[in-house]
Length: 517
Image (cartoon, rainbow, N blue to C red; front, side):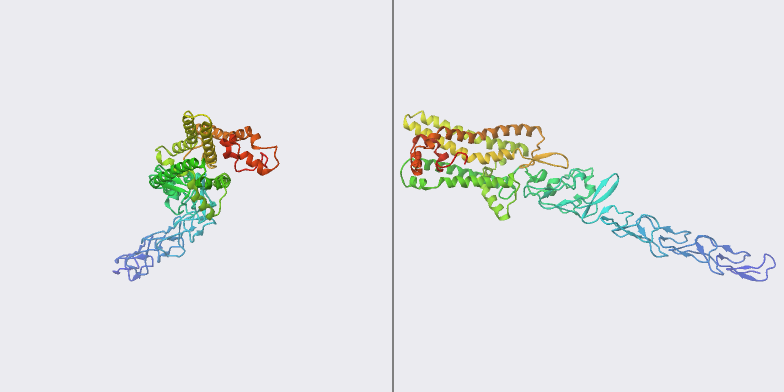
């Protein structure tokens, strides 16, 4: 008896009938035994061949009549498989009979294989797609790396945190040292309007950019370019690059081209003013309409205005007080009356620190040289005359010297004191000069410079002592004790020609005040 495919005979010899192959078996015919389906295959009754399990199913035993669907958390994307593959780390599959796993969405994770669902990240943490753990910070937080782990901390004040592995990016008006990721939370207030801030989602703020083998300049993430406005460099963006100069009216660095033109203009105006003063002083010696007008000017009020201007200009620096915007803008415009308008840094080619050193030296030495010139000219003039004319010329030059000391003492002393004011940086223990952070206060050059500035400062502080000595030597002529009439006292004092050379110091004061007032 010959049986067809899918059947077998009922006996090895003398077969009388054909029997269907059971499910899980198959036959090609002419056989007394059906063949078992292999693992990964299946068949129904009277099968002429076994079929491979389809994708998403499997058969882990032989002689299988049907394939099983992959469980949730597993998949198979090939046919004829004997087992499903578990979803990998960072993946999940919530349905059965699937051909692939799904990556965990951002903000979720799966830390074991065969996950049915992904878990949400804990508060303050985040993850990328397909993450097996939450190793990133959520928005408003940043990561701190310690002992091979990450801790998510709240964003520091005056900075923006976009989350992920990005460091805090300072807001406009603030600065951070990017030389090491360890310093990312130390945000500093900038004394100038040169800190432009940065977008926290910029790739330069990623943790990887701090650990790159390339320099910050090569990656386009150099500190000054990222944080400082044009021309500003150094810690706190508090110094100006070569070719730029700080302008008090804008609190920023300006290109030296326009600054030089402004400096020449200011210098020309200053020279013209000096020449005008000389002419007016010559007219002052005679009775004419110009003399009468000059004598009517309240010089005491002018002195008060000058001193008040110097005090107000120093308050924001000395007391670290910030005035309202309108008043600050007015002070910025008024800064043109200071010697800073000469833009001395623009006429130098040294490094930032050296330029500042030279500028302070010029501020300190120039009035001394002008004083010497005043007395040299005086000596040349008096050598040609004698008698009362000699005394008159000497009094003129002493008056010029006293006027010069009165004008330069406040701004020069402030410049010198600013040269001693260093800002300590808590993150690395360094310190830089507040007025120009291109100067490292721990450098040997600065230590020598500081010593010289202190010496100049002590010399300039002798000016008020000199004034006091002059007034004290003439105290009897200044305070007329024999008269009780105040007007008579003042008339007698003003008529005393022996006081002409120091009249600048007292002419605007009454005689009824004590010296300590």
